[in-house]
Structure formats: structure tokens, C-alpha cells
Length: 487
Image (cartoon, rainbow, N blue to C red; front, side, top):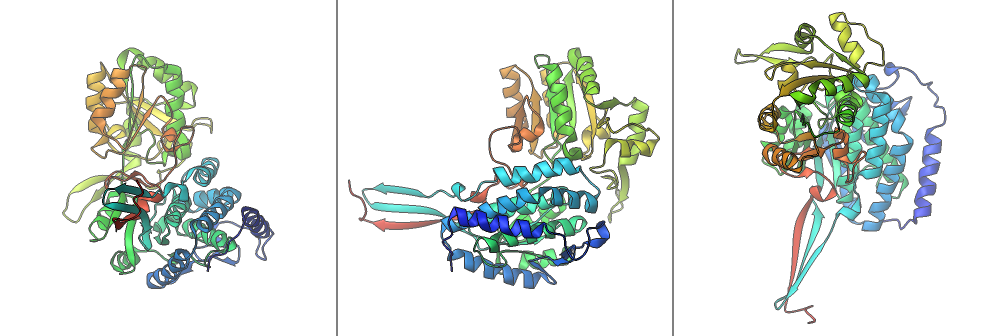
């Protein structure tokens, strides 16, 4: 049953629960060994179950409870989730770095606050009415039911909370199958959502997860009759799996975002913006700058500007040596050898990565840059680490041709620094990416320092783009013939 709480009552509940949560626990705070995927500092996490079947059953019960709630009460739930996320942003950031060994606490804290502030809620759900000589037709955005969501290790708790806000705003329940490398952090976020929901008058569990997510638990989720929509934020393998499930699926896949800098750009600003974006959370966001194509006549100034903003320029020999460290060879079942990213380097601080080739730098060095040919691994591979390959080009035609090829048809994200409208337009048309950022760091593309809402599920392969609450709805039509037409 819905509880018609006022905004003041919701704020009071949130403040009381958050205050209680911050009190010292019976078990002292400690390192990673003191928490796991089922508890945090001796407190059992809410919404985490031994089997996927049980998690789905409970999420389905939560969905049925939310169906009876008003949209206003649903928005109060979302308000509580936002407040809890802001209050515990630093905790989740610390857990994420401790568990995954990737990223930076200060940047992950900022990402959680971005999710809290700029993920759309129920205002994103808009009805349509059409009248004519034959009467009235009403189209509404309805929930799917229970959504099955796959989440990554790169932005684990950020994605869980962002997905939860949007999916709950749409009226759904959610069951998560987190990345195995970020189980504890993801399940902490599941617990946070449930604490917020229950405190604001919702069901005790609305989003659920499992103690040990595996390919088997994911398979159960794909096939379960109660799962009506699948949403995957991850690599090409898991995206392919959800798209092969036979169910409605939203897939957010890989990218390799290129940057073009032409000779009309504000070069000093471009240098700072590119490095700020490339190094944000150590390059973990899939929208981050991955390779640069710069006009030859301004390349020296751009490189110098990058060095002033915390970069070390590698020699070609050092770049080649580092490439052999950050990418390793893997032999597939078919006997073919391919290169894969070294997980020990993904999302790590620049100085940690450089130490692997004997280079010692201070914490002020946040990115390694290198001028390399187009064919180099620093250009062709999505590394997700603060390493940036730079390619000189003679003109806009060469820049666009190489940038489009380096993006590999992912149609994810691209960037450009220019004051030439024709060049900007030509690149945007050619690259066809979901996000195109002009004259700003990459994170502006998801609303951080730029206009527009945020998301950590950018669905290029399936076309939803920058997902929000409306992405997790299905349209229902109600037709009244020869009535309610008053003109």
C-alpha cells in the first residue's frame, strides 16, 4: 500500500536513517577483508540472495508493491535514493577502488554525486494524448515488470544506482547480476537503494542481487519468465549474450573515442580539456578520450600544453615497450592469438603503470602521452588507462578518415576541438556516434560540466543512446472512439 508521505517527512526519514548508518558499528572499520558481498562492517546487506531465482522472486514482489503506488510516492522514493547516494558517495568510492584496484576515490565520489543529481526521475515519463473526429487516444509509458541488469566493474555502484533510479522511476523492479570483479561494491549499492526505498515508504526490497554472480546466474536471469527486459552495461561478450536471449534487450557496449584537434582550436584549452577528460577516474569511463588526431601545424603546441597539465611524453621506444605490458596475448579456442588489455593496468594511476617499464614519476604525472603511427596499439585498442596516443595529420580529411577508422564502428563517443563549424559538422556526420563532445572534456557528454542528464548505460548497439527512465518503459495505448472529443 502506498504511503502518502510529504517531502518534509521523506527528508526527515532520510536524515534519520543516514545518521543512524554513520554511527560506529560493532565491528570496527577495516580493510577489504572486513567486508564482502553480503555484509559491510558487520551489517547484513539488504537485497542480496544466495540464488538468482530467489532474487528474482523478491524483486517481482517489490515490483507488484510499486505498481500500487502513486507516481508522486515513487518520486519520493527516488528523492530518498538521491539523498542516500550523496551521503554515502565517498564510502562507495572507497569500496570501489579497494575492491577493483581501479580508478580514483575523489573522481568516483564525484561520479556518485553526478548520478544523484542528474539521473532523471519520474519527470522523464511523459504521456501523450491525441484527439480527432474519431475520439481520444491516450499513450502512456508503462513498466516492463522486473528488469534484469548486468553491471560493469569500471563504474559498479554508479551504474547500479543510476539504473535503479531510472528503472524505479519507470515503475519496475530490478535484479542485478554484477561484474564478478566488483560484487561487494555493487551489492553495497543494492543495499543502499533498498534502505532508501524502505525508509521512504516503499517495499522492503525493490532491487535485488546475488551473493556470487556468475555466467550461470546470468543465464538464469536471461531465461527466467519473470524477467521482461534485459539491460547490459559491459563488454561486447555480455552485450552479445543479452541480445541473443530472445527478449527485449538494451545493450551498452564498448567504445574507442577519438579526438580531433584542428588548427582553429584554442590549443591551450584543448590540451587541458583532453587531459582532464582522459584522466578522469584514470580513463575508466567508456566516453573518455582514447586517442588524438591533431593537425601537424599545431601538434607541438598541443603536446607542450599537455605536458604543462601533468603529462609525461614517452619516446617511441618507451611507448612500444609499454604497449607490450598493457596488452597481453591470448590464444582463443580456435587457436587464433589476439591482444587483450592487461587487467592489472586498467584504471591504475599513471605512475603505477609506468613503473612496470622502470619509469619512476611522481603523483603529479597523471597521463603518459606518445606520438605514434596510426597502426599503434595506443590508437587501435581501448586501453581504459591514462595513456594517450597522438597521431599527426595534415588536414581535416585525413583526421576524419583516421578517427572514424580508429573508432571501429562502435558509434559510441567522439570529441573535437575546433572553431570551424564546417569541420565540426563534417566529423559529426562521418563518425555517427551516440555522443559528440565539442570543445570540452569528455565527461561533459554525460552532464558533468555540460547540459543534459547523466547515465552510465550508453546504449549505442541497440539505439536507445543516453538511457533514462523512459528507456525502461513500454508504450501502451488506450482508445476511446466517438467520446471525449469536445470540439
